[in-house]
Amino acid sequence: MLEQLKAFFEGKSIVILGFGVEGKATYRLIRRLLPEMEIVVADGNEKADMAEIAQGDVHCRFQVGENYTDNLTDFDMVIKSPGISMKELPKIDEEKLTSQTELFIRFYRNQIIGITGTKGKSTTSSLIYHLIKQHSDDCVLVGNIGTPPFEIIDSIGKDTIVVYELSSHQLEHIKVSPHVAILLNFFQEHLDHYASYEKYQEAKFNIALHQTAEDFLIYNYDYALIRQWIEKSELTSTLIPFSLNTKLKRGAFAKDSTIYQIDRNDLEYIFNSEGTQLKGRHNFLNIMAAVCAAKLCIVPDDKISNGLKSFQPLEHRIEYVGTYEQIKYYNDSISTIPEATMAAVNALKDVDTLILGGFDRGICYDDLMDFVENIEVSNVIFMDEAGKRMRDIYLKKSYGKKNIFSVDTLKEAVGLAKQHTAKRKICLLSPAAASYGMFKNFEERGEAFKQIVRI
Image (cartoon, rainbow, N blue to C red; front, side, top):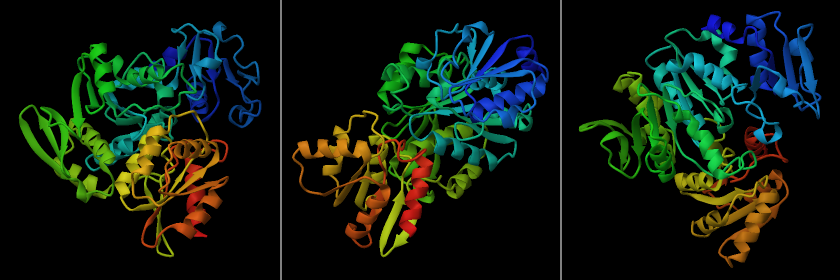
């Protein structure tokens, strides 16, 4: 495959657009394959870390700062990084525009299980990888979870299964789809990056749009929006649904705490959820998607069952921090939308203090405030700009059953939680908002929460 990639790049004028983790991995691979090829690296950040990566490379030119998008149409190939919005760019010929994601899928598609969804994709991807590893060591986990595929391309043989977590930004404008695609859900997020919510859904659905009759789409049957996209797209791939609410004729479904796998009328018991550390009904969906993928990879049932029991939840996802002065603390910093926060509260069931708020992206919080009013939470702490808007919505609805607090910092929020949370109850950080401004990302916010709690 490396020789095919080399031939694909050879003789073309190439610009790498964006020099973050993925851009650097792209540069390193091209430079390794073609040591004397002229490469241009373009990045809006004038302080982008280029010198260390390309030091002494006389065949690499940098185009940085305000005018980094100049002359993009002059190149044969524009390899765009996922963090760059199409809104920032001049109109580029679709045939010239590509990405590391598209290139990797183009050359390795038959080995790839691709996973996307607004929420749950990291857990599902990690769980699939964990289940396959119970049966075979020839498996890698790449993509949005932190490792660009080009970074570990030497670890990928012809039989290696590639579990690929895919964001909407990575899927936007791709013209190929993976052999096995998993679509978990759509929620309103990243709308600052897209012209509309429909355009965001369109980007996500690219994971399946270009599949063939030899491919498989594992999808959440409970989301009407996903079913609508499938119906109007006239897919030829084999459809494998999973559901919490409907007994299906094929795929996976849940009844009470038990998950079943079914192929037409051949019903098969798979797993009782009480044996897993993944909390909440929303994680049932992630488990069912992972089970369907593992079954396609011919992982034996006993290996699947053992893997589901041994899987450790990822950090910042309803993560138990500890019990301090008889108060239990949970870190759910990953929750950046209302639906995720509601799922976390429902999963824990014993929350007395809820910390909400962060960067305000204009998300509608009316349903979340209705939910907050109707759950048995005594204290609600609103934080930062999104928190202020949530609080205003809450007060306008004339609610009055909760203790309401407004704070400017996470440290203040935790301090209030320590004072007001009932003993043997839970304080939950589940912000329903992005972390930007106060923190670099949700991981940094979650780590800060854990440190403050433990002081």
